[in-house]
Length: 248
Length: 323
Image (cartoon, rainbow over all chains, first blue to last red; front, side, top):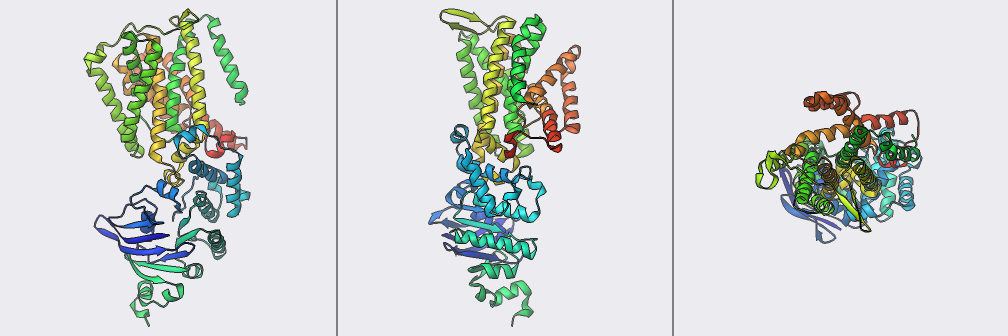
C-alpha cells in the first residue's frame, strides 16, 4: 500500500534519515520503533507531506506522493495524529469533529460558500465520538477533558477524513496501562474495519502485542524489519536499545 | 440579547433617523455605515481567519480612487463601482498569493509594506492620480427607475442609499461567516496544521478571505469618494488601516457584531475629540492599547465570555468556534 524507497533528509548538517526503505502492506499494523532521535517522527512528517525528502520517494498505491502538500495527501487517503496532541482546543469536543468534517466535505471554496452543513454531518460526528467513546463529553470544551480523552479525540479527528492508511505518532505516550488498553482496542477495531495502520511507540510490550510487523530505526537508518518475535531476538536491535554488553 | 428583536429595532430607528432633521446626525451615521462596511471585511480576515492584515486602508483608498477616476471620466457610478471592486479584488488576490504563505507577524509586516507601496503609488503617480492635489468634484450616484432619475446627492438620500448598501453587505458578511466557508476559516485560525490535515488547501481559503475583506473595503471606499466628493492620497494610508483595525479589535474580533460596535465607538471618539482632529491617530492609538491591555476580546468577545461563564446560552454557531 505504501512504499518508502531510499528516503533521506538533512536538517542543516544533520542527516535525520538515510536510505530508509520499507513497505506498509494493506490491512496490517506496522510498528515503528527506535531510540529517541532515530527519525521516526521525521519519517511520518515526510509520508504525510509536511517535509519533502532530499532523496528517495514515497509511493502510495503506486503513486508518488513525495512533494505533495499534506491536504492533497489527506485526500488520497493518508492521515495522522501528532506526538503532542493537536486539537482545536477552544472548541467543544464535537466541534473538533464537525469542523474537520466541514473541511473534508467542503474543501472547495465554491462548495464551502454554497452548500450547507445538514443534520447528517452532526450524525456522522456523533458516530465518530461513539467509536472513541467520547459521546458523553460531546459538548465539553476540549480544554476541560483529560489528556487521555484528548488523545482519543485526536484519533477521531484523524479518521474523520476516512484514511486508508493511518499514522499514529505515540498514541499512548504518558498514559496509564488501563488507558493504553483503551487505545489498543480502538486501534484493533480500526484495523478490523479495514484501516491500515503504522504506529510509532516506545512501550515495547504494547507494540510487540499489537503489531503484525515492526521496523526498527536507529540514527535515521532502518536496522531491522520483521515479525515481533524476530525483532526481539535481533542483535542490532538489542544493541541499539540496551547497549553492547546485553548482546548474548 | 435577542438579535431577532435588536436588529429590526435598530433598522427601524435608522430609517427614522432623518426625522430628527439633524443633518449632523445623518452625516455621522452615513460615515459610520461606510466605515462599518470596511471593518466587517477586516473582521473576516483578522477575526475569523486569524490573519492580521494591516492593509485594509489601502484597499479602501484604492476602491475610492479607482471609482472616482472612472466617474470623473464620465462613467456611471455603478459601473465604476463594479470595476473598482473587481480591480481591488484582483490586487488583493495577487498580494494574498505573495503574502499569505507567511505566518503571524511576518504576514502582518508584509501587508503593512504593501499598504505603504500602494500609498506611494497613489501619491507619486501624478499623471493618473493627480498625486497630492487629489481628486475633486466627484459627482454623486444616481439611478433611473422607469424613466425617473433619482439622485443621491442630498445628505438624506445618500444616507438611505448607504442604509440599503449596509443591509446588502451585512447579508453577504453573514452568509460568508455562517456558511461552511466560515467554519473552515475558523479552523485555520484555531489550528492551521490540523485544518490542513482535514484536507483544506490553506492558501486557497486564506487568499479567498483576504479577497473578501478587500471587496468590502473597496465598496466602502467607492461610496466614500462619492459621498465626500473629493479624495486625497491620505485615504490609502496606513492611518485608515489602523482605524479599521482599532474598530475590529475594540468591537471584538471574530464576533459578528464586533465591527458595528467597534466602528460606532471609533466614530464617536473621532466626533467627541473633533477639536483635536490632528491627534485622531494618537487617540485611536490609546483606545487600541487600552482595548488590547484590558479587553483583548473586545466588547462583543467579552460579552460572550461573560455569558458563557454565567452558564448562558451561546449562539448555535459557537459549537464551531464562531461567535
